[in-house]
Image (cartoon, rainbow, N blue to C red; front, side, top):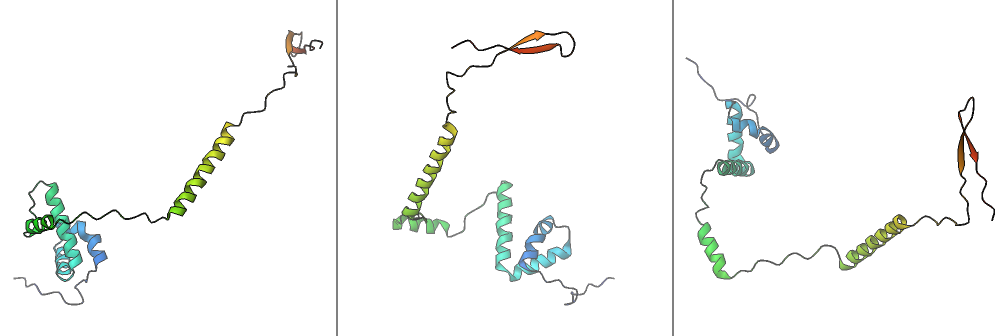
Length: 156
């Protein structure tokens, strides 16, 4: 006959929220009874981790296709809110001042224009009076086999 004793303070492992979340996947797999006991003990004293567990369990149930029912007072709260005529709150104003937004837009436009100016600059036109140097290849005995002779420019 084996008698199990309650864990003593020396053998009992205290768990914090960080450790709870790190070990949560192993807890859900339910392979280690000691880990499950520690996790359950932590959830009894920590409302945040108990909420985390409940939210994940409900999410898994939704993914598995089980029907999830709203909280008991949800319908009454929804009807009261609709009857009160409460409006949807307005969107928050931008956190950037109008002046700063305008200055940023002007700087951005200036950078775009300067970039386009650099990209669009055409090379300087070639002067029409410059003559091209034309070479005529000529075969020659020995090495090299091909020699290029310069053709003199036509008289002006």
